[in-house]
Length: 110
Image (cartoon, rainbow, N blue to C red):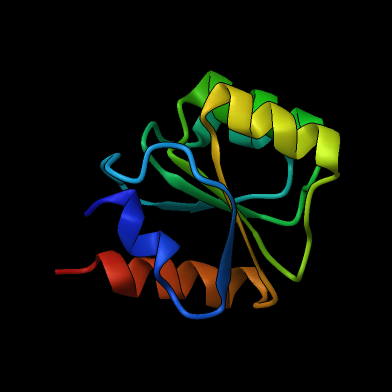
């Protein structure tokens, strides 16, 4: 499954595009940056409510394919600019973390 599929999900807004052709490995949910740093899968879709610059650093470190900000969380303009510069895909949805992750999982399931 490619990231473009996630971009097209109803109720998800693309804030920073990254590489729409990038392959996705699986979905990961976590709101503790220290745990995500050690456990987020490479090429994963990370669903979280942590909308700050440190989230970008962890995504970059773990080679996360995409960050999905749940519960209507967004990023400030400076952080969005940094995400775009670094090619980190960021989406936002009003859905709770579990529901957002479930939608991504269902979209990626064969």
